[in-house]
Every structure is written in structure tokens, then in C-alpha cells.
Amino acid sequence: MFPLRDTIPSRTVPVVTWALIAINVASWFHQLGQGSHFERYLFDHGLVPQAYFWHAARQPYDLVGRFVPVVTSMFLHASWMHVIGNMLFLWIFGDNVEDRLGHLKYLAFYLLCGTAAALIQTHLVPDSGIPMVGASGAIAGVLGAYFLFYPRARVLSVVPIFFFIQVIEIPAFFFLGFWFLMQFLSGAAQAGAGQGGGGVAFGAHVGGFVAGLVLGPMLARRQPRRETYPTKEVFHPW
Image 1: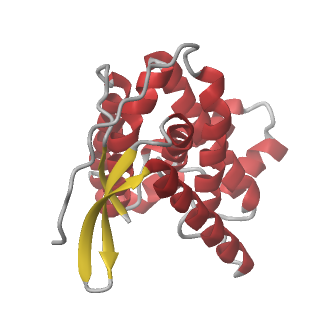
Image 2 (image 1 turned 45 degrees about the horizontal axis):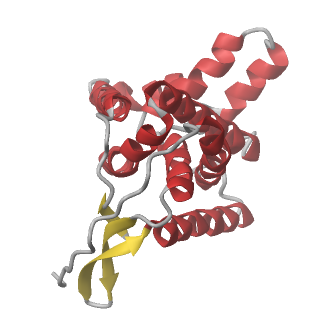
């Protein structure tokens, strides 16, 4: 399933979501500008579990060297598909969560979820020397909050069915629940195969989603807006 949009219009201007997307895109083009030093740049600014625990053991008071990569890694990506996919999910789901939390709380929520996701993945693969990069942990937190706040919303999605491509509206509860289940099962399979040190950081996705489930209600406005859902539209196979 591939999301195209949801059915809930934003009631406020999602300035933080737009800013986060702009920063991630600008950071990606800055990465491309590194040319042959692209990979070195990821090692310098991504979160390397080995380096994180080295700082913890050898330089426990060097909090900058230890935790700055946790934040900078959230704004780095490994490929065009990586950044495009993450920004699409943030574009679709971020504005409504920002509506529910308010701008400043939403920014804090995003960074906290990203931090939780990164640290969980780091503790799952403490011996890995591969840099962890990507906004997906923080965005998984956004998905977790959306799952709680808007379970009856619908997500217009591309669904391949055998040789046909169907465009249908899927309840957010099912779409995001299925997404979380796939991340959890993929992470378990990855860990069982001993491949947790590289590839997709499924542990970060699971950890970020759970962080969103926990932090979302804590930061939500006391009198949330009433949900409205447009009439379901009918779409035909492509």
C-alpha cells in the first residue's frame, strides 16, 4: 500500500511540518553537494552506535559529541527514494497531528520521537559501525499519534491487486496498524537473521511509533477539535 493523501483537511497552516520538510530537502541537496565525500558525510553526521557507546564509556561528559548526532541523523537520508518516501508520509500525516498538538508542542513531539527511535535502534545494535540516518523514526512517531487521534480517517492509497493497480480509501486505523505490524515483523526477521546492523532500521520505526502513541496524548490539547470526514469518493483501477 502506498499513501497519496488523507481525507482530513488541516485547519491551521502546518508551518512546522512545512519547515521540517524544507529542512530535510535542503539537507539532502547539501548532502548531494558533498560529491565523493557523500559517504564520509554520513559517518560524520549520522548516528553510529559504536561511536555513541564509545562516547558514553570514554567521554561521559561530552554530551555534545554523544547526542548531537542523534539530532543531525534525523535530517540526513541515504537516497532519493529514502527522502521522497519520508517526506510524503510527513506531508500526508504531519499537518493533522500538528493541528492537534499545536505548533511548538508538535515540534517538541517530533524531535522527542526521533530521539527515542534513534536511541532504541542504537541499543538494539550497539556494535554496529554503520551510520543511522533518516527522518523515519520521528515520522513513525507522527504516524503513531495519527493512529490514536484519527482512527476513523481514511487514507487514499495505491494498492496493487494481482495485475491491477487499485486506488482506494483505507481506514487510517487499518492502514497504520498494518504498517506497524509490517515494521515489527520485518524487524523481528532482521534480528533473527543477524542483520540488525545495516539496511532499514525497523527497530527505529517500531520505537518511534510507540513513542508517538505515548507522547501524543500527553501533549495533545485538552479540548481537541471535532473530527470531520468528507464523503467517500469512488475511484477506479488504473
